[in-house]
Amino acid sequence: MSHEIEHDANGNAMMAYAYRSESDVPWHGLGTKVSNDLTPEQMLKAAGLDWTVDPVDLYAEVAGNRLPTGHRALVRSSDQRVIDVITNDWNPVQNSEAFEFFNDFVAHGDMSMETAGSLRDGKIIWALAKVKDSFDLFGGKDRVDAYLHFTNPHQYGQSIDVRFTPIRVVCNNTLTLSLNSKSKNMVKVSHRREFDPEQVKEALGVAKQKLAKYKEMAEFLSKKRYTDENVVDYFKRIFPVLTTKTDSKKELSNSAERGMEIVKFSKQPGAEFGKGSWWEVYNAVTYMTDHEIGRSVDARLTSAWYGANKNLKVRALELAAEMAEAS
Image (cartoon, rainbow, N blue to C red):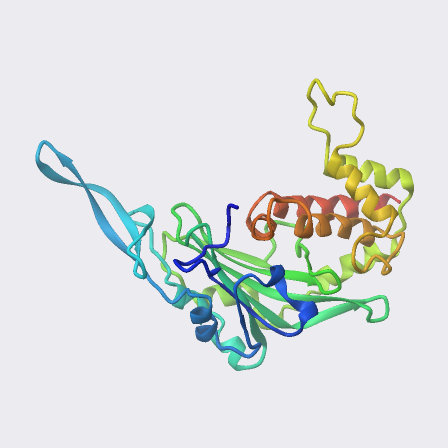
């Protein structure tokens, strides 16, 4: 089986997660289980990420002459493997620098380290920290926790990405915080300039971030009722039929039919909260992307954070809000 999460020479997943209970184990227990009070540095080491990436000049042999190419190999210190090829103006950010971003927050008790790991053979390093903030729906029964997600790519053309990520506790669905891609709930930093963590913290407004906007949206969806016709239209638009000669007459795609089934027969955890509301319909999509769509657990994780499923969730929330407003 192909893995998005990197594995070391012994076959161990290069990932660590904070253990709280058997019912709260992320991604089916992939990686190393650690206590929930680790420092960022301890989480870095537990996940096997305590290595550096070092630029090494590349040369071309031409007619017996060694000529500079203007490119550099990004070499990992732990195994001397070339992770990518970069240009001279691309500044690598070491994993230790990325994790230091969390130091003050963890020390002051504002956050706790949750998970960390390596994807795509070291090209993507991530850390997820739980923010001491949350909100509840339906009288405290349906809780949404806040997390800060830091992505440090060792891949040419990719930017450092720091964003808030809400997670619905009852089903461990990774939600999408912002309806606007330009929102200050996320910050991207180009590798073409030096990484300044203080600048990122200021831009995010981390200390004052309260998820108020998302709570308002969630409450709005939880109070708006759908009709059977609305739901059919919703899933048709989220999971359209990709027309071919064999399915040109098909009304619903397989994914759309599955979404309808989840809603109709309450087949997702937490379905009892907001039954009949657009909150239920939207979370049918987040449940599918996080727990069903994809060839493996780690493939779903990667897609939910960096791939097609991330964009799908944004679309699902926007359309749910649009249709709830019209209902």
